[in-house]
Length: 117
Image 1 (tube, rainbow, N blue to C red):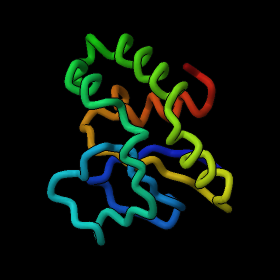
Image 2 (image 1 turned 60 degrees about the vertical axis):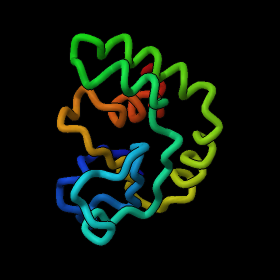
Image 3 (image 1 turned 90 degrees about the vertical axis):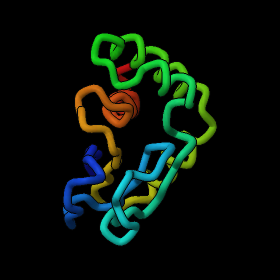
Image 4 (image 1 turned 120 degrees about the vertical axis):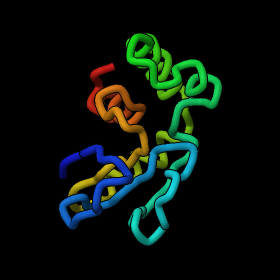
């Protein structure tokens, strides 16, 4: 089993395995069919306050990362995500909408799941 992250605007493939949308808001302009999302865990995303503060500003990324990791430490929806991951028999892809993959909430979440926070 391998965890991946992938933008919602990239084509879904069989290698993705189970696709979990980890954004609070559905990706703009993407139909449910095209997105091929198996699970949507809205509340695993950063709080609205944190997301608005961050505004995808790369200069704020390190502090965003620290704050989001703290949110994840206390987020009860992590259990739902962990259950889906543990029950999967193949790859799991965390799907997100942000243009900047390296500075996205999905990247922080992936690192957090790997205990890199």
